[in-house]
Amino acid sequence: TKKVDPKVLANKAAKAVKAGASTIKKKAKKIRTSITFHRPKTLQKARNPKYPCISALPRNKLDHYQILKYPLTTESARLKTTTRRKSRMLSRRCTISRQK
Image 1 (cartoon, rainbow, N blue to C red):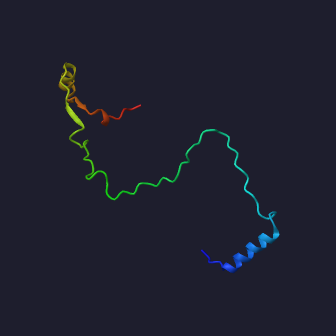
Image 2: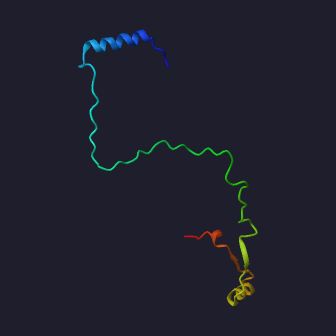
Image 3: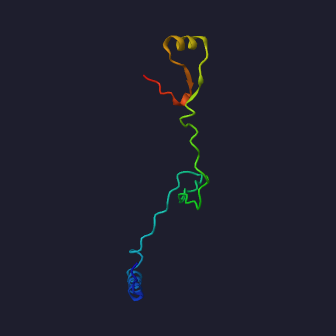
């Protein structure tokens, strides 16, 4: 910011007074269109926490031991294990990627 000499400001003010009211513009009155007052939305700063809300990061609950739940023991599954030599396992629903 530049500092302006007070004498210069005083001279400007004196000139404005001498010139008269024609140089000073009045602000137009704001026309209100609604009868209810709406509070203006003011500055909302982003959060700047001093420490995290969670002290420790959450543990990954879906590791490679949690993907397969248990073997399927229905009669049709047992037949397939004996004929095709492939065991049927139930897996977690979130790990299955369905093919289209």
